Length: 106
Image 1: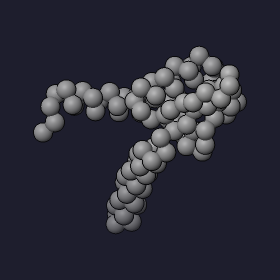
Image 2 (image 1 turned 30 degrees about the horizontal axis):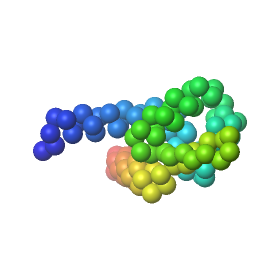
Image 3 (image 1 turned 180 degrees about the horizontal axis):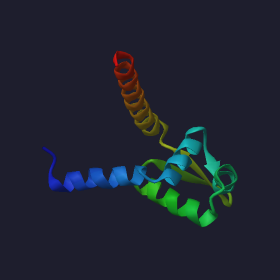
Image 4 (image 1 turned 45 degrees about the vertical axis):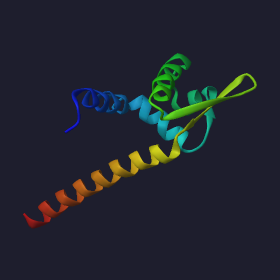
């Protein structure tokens, strides 16, 4: 059984992923590295909103950045993001398949 501290860490991580804006930024960055201007164009979010969300994602280790002159290029930790997305997609697919089987049996 995980300790109460570890459960709190789990909870904070899942809260981080529960924000649609952060998920949208992760999906954008999963396609490839981008700067904030590109993320603004792709999402329509304000610069301050994107910076705040990226900071939270960076602290969680889901994104990283590197300087390119005056620009900051952001990228997703593709292995972890891909694993998380695959787990969620598989779970949702299984749930829908179960629902379809229940409807077919009725």
